[in-house]
Amino acid sequence: MIKPPKKQTHPLTLIFAICLAAGTIIAIIAASTPLTPEQQAKRDTQATIDTLTSRTKQHLRTHLLTPSIAKIQLRHHIIKNDWQDYHIITGHVDTQNKYGTTLRKTIHYIYNTDTLKLTYAALDNKTLQGHIPLSLK
Image (tube, rainbow, N blue to C red; front, top):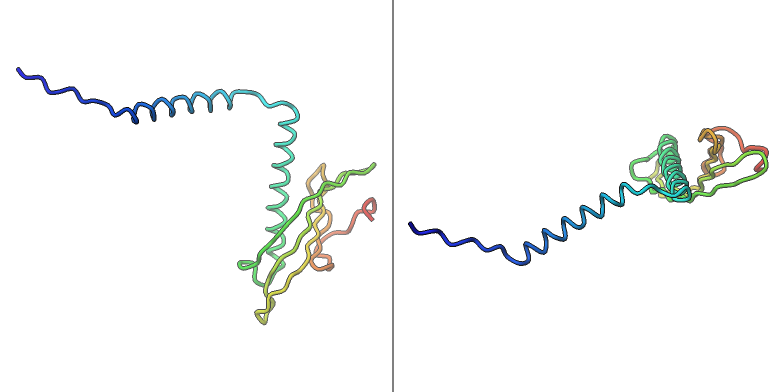
């Protein structure tokens, strides 16, 4: 009986398989390594910023005439004082009015750091919600 010739594996396939296995092992080790308190605090702060940015955009779109084509640019600041800390989100939005003209409007949002509750919202210095906290005036 004649044996079929052994199929040879291409060297690049072997190298790829070894790299994939090594990458998987490294990813598992990295995922199981606990974060330092500083790294965890940074991750938590970034998650809070992402949440507040998303809330700001969502709230702002309810006050725009053409929310689907609005271009929103935001910056985030944390203000700390003796009584209370605040997350302040500022920026601008390019949106259209009822005549189709593109306008740039300024945005100011203030959130309480402890509760993440919206304290104040303004679009082009027109208050949409709340008031500026006395400690920030």
